[in-house]
Figure: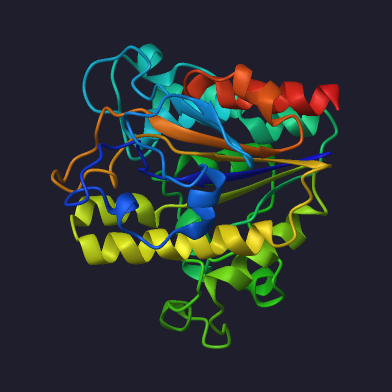
Length: 303
């Protein structure tokens, strides 16, 4: 039994407005297949399809203002209502007051305490490690969780062996990041690499942040490219995905890319897509961002 989690930053459930919602106009056949032929929209509640369960999640967590990555991701990866504890939404990095919670309750640590094999599949260039060694504190929830739990952060060496995934999927920027020997791959190939990595672990996470970047850009062309690359990545993953022994989850921390009429985040619900083994059981446990980590922990305990 394994769990494969794809976290995509800034993907909400938007309105049926093709002029502002790139999810409606992008060429995303894999996503449409998972969603039953039509990408998630505000007018569709939680539902089942032949391939997945689609669950709208509350990303506001009862707090006013616009959800942000620091508190939203802390909620996802700890199961704790971070914005309520902090008193407001905050981002893009987790505030210092939440770090003790993140250190104790992050999903990597808790799964390791169960004896599970875990991996954060994003690979990072040399300059990231230089940044960490400098004592800098502006780290994302995922990277900080790994450092706190002692989970190795993957390098260019793992990426070159197809044992890690580039944040942009294609690796096209790695030469300018100081790694001229890293050659590009297609998003589909990256998805196949993701699945291969996942077969050796109980829990595998990949983080895709370009969706949030595209939402802030308000560029329909850029947003479509980012979504279509993501869809090809999903196609590569599901090309080998074993539905009998694995559970796949797709989740986001807040809305953004689904409404290009605004440069800001949105208060829209975010999609959780669950496919594979025990998908209906997992879906029943989900209502908001704080339910992701407990659902994964319980799923692996029961399997």
